[in-house]
Amino acid sequence: MDNTPYDDVFRTLLTDCTELMIPVVNEIFHTHYTGKETICLLQNEHFIKMPDGSEQERITDSSFEIISEETAPIAQGQKKRYHIECQSTEDGSMIVRMFEYDTQLALENREFTSNILTVQFPDSAIVSLRHTKNTPEEMTVKVLTPGGRVSYTVPVLKVKRYTIHELFERKLFFLIPFHIFAYEKDFKELEENKKKLKQLEAEYASIRERLEIACQMGDLNRYAKAAILDMSRKVIEHIAVKYKNVAKGVSRTMGGKVLNYEAKDILNRGRREGEEYTKIQIATKLLNMGNDIKSVAELAELPQKTVEKLAQSISKEEK
Image 1 (spheres, one colour):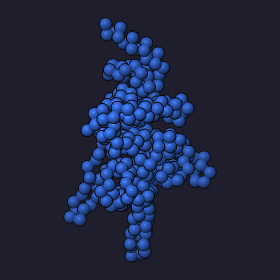
Image 2 (cartoon, rainbow, N blue to C red):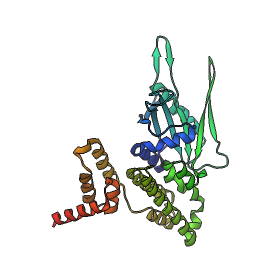
Image 3 (cartoon, one colour):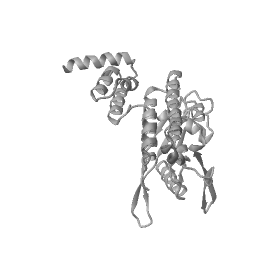
Image 4 (cartoon, rainbow, N blue to C red):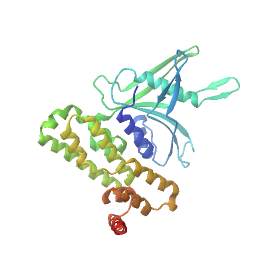
């Protein structure tokens, strides 16, 4: 199955803002992670042996391990593996692919002692972007073995079910880029009805404001905020590609282009190199790439006045 732009957004957010997945895991599996845990991303490329002996590559949307904080009262340093897939279109084969992925993940983390092979399956779930009345709350895999029957459930999180208030209340920031799916059936009307389109734009303006408040409250860092805004625009541009007024209006409301891959590379390099690569150097690179002052201030986590002065000095040097 080919990857969709929504799969790419899902993986990008997981890679760039891994910490945002913790509340999603809590929501799906009813766990109680605090956010202080360590998340380790696991390999997403797997090769599955086909009946004719050939191998086919499968790429999971998210395979990761959560390591409990050392101060956890029950199991210090406890590890648990998770596998979550993003589904944009129901085709009836998702549970088959989930089992294929889960089996491969279990085999890659196998233990063999004496004459006993132990495989541990990850906790798996599906994030459904376009659920219908026929979409189940969970799916089940049953395996009939010579030693008996084994089964496990795969819960389904239905994104359209959540209001924007609930997403913020439960800190499900990771799901905000997919909130637009709740309005997909209304695109035709929104395209032709300026008043209703203005109402949707107002909702997205409030989303941007609430993201800023979340930053000020310490629930979100500015890099994650920029990533959420940018990924939201990417989803909107793809899902509303046939509705130019909707795509343009909502994207504009979310703000100008804040994040691009070059900027992310610079910021990530700066994080890796620490003090050797200061915020000022990051801001300088971003300004030289043509990013606007406000965007650079958000990405480099610097006061806007500082970036303005930096931009002025760069302009003088060029003259």
